[in-house]
Amino acid sequence: MAGVELTATGAVLALIIGLVASGIGGAIGGIMTGGKSLGNELAAMMGGFYGPIGGVTGILVGLIVLALVG
Image (cartoon, rainbow, N blue to C red):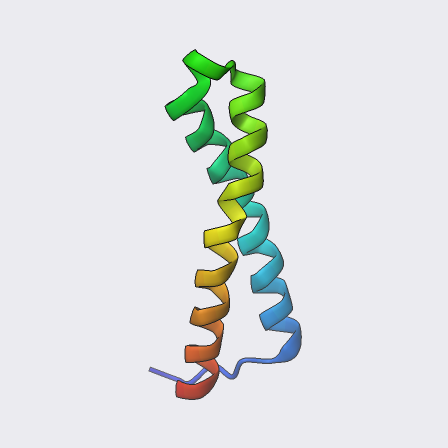
């Protein structure tokens, strides 16, 4: 497999895309888990806030590992 070099632009782009995706995933997960008891809007807002907390950490770890390996 040909090596793909990680650039600063690519890392920032991956971080932004991951942040948006984890926010959307958190909102969907919040609606699925707490939408009935809290209401869909509140559950989506809470999920959209707490989703990126874990998502961004995983993305940063992945980018660091990719930078060290590649």
